[in-house]
Image (cartoon, rainbow, N blue to C red):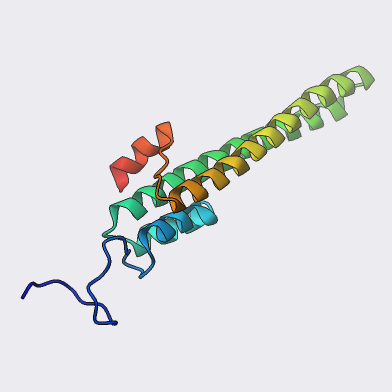
Length: 143
């Protein structure tokens, strides 16, 4: 007899099952659902599953980077709006246009991150294991 662990149903665990009892692809996809929050949760709940941990770290890195980028764009837009309100009409128009441009860039970043979020959830659930260039390198180190 082998020393194979047996679950509560009396069966041996499935190869694709995670430590939480979820299938590996479901657990990995759930790491993306709430961004870095669900990434942290899945990272802590899955100490032995490298696939789920990879996607958890990639989720933390990607959602954290998007969050930081959007905060930087919003701060720059707020500073430009404040600077425009101090000067005369000419500076208000110039700063307003540049601030509007930052608002547009912020919207585009948000829409791109929404598309990326959906892509990561769907492809991970389909067991395609998407790898984003910089985030995957970091995830490989910590998974």
